[in-house]
Image (cartoon, rainbow, N blue to C red):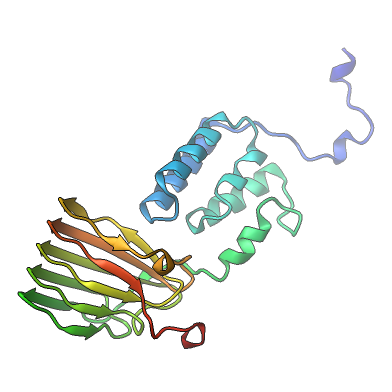
Length: 227
């Protein structure tokens, strides 16, 4: 009976609210969107989904999506409902501060670029504002430079059909690379130092490769001062 009697100081404590199925579903939707954007790999997605389903209290949910831009609005709502202080003491704030320097990526509004490489190729620099790049390569490939088009908040989609061919794609530092291509006896080679954190934009690769693939490399002429 004594457990039901409020104790001194209890009224000053935030309510420990239970999470609902709707709350957990909203977090799962954010995780799926982040995975589709390339922010989470399959292993991370599985881990966070399992943690979400096992969560009992509302206050435990925000930290699962605190580092994902897709979840900004939901994090704010969950914290408000759970009575969590959004100040420096809040869980995941250090990640949130880093995220401020990584604006959500959006496609450009300029004209698309088209390239055809058959038994050869060319060197092509993609200019700032380009909305997308579409290419076709047959037993050939081009050198595609992206240092002008990429930047904070930029999303560029490169769609390519390659048959026994592939391009050399040069990116500046800080570019997140999302590989959505379909490959048959083929695949893309993304250099470790070319894969960035998204602070300088997002490059999305899609299309189809048959006995082919692209090499994505860090632009040898790029330096941090070039940003």
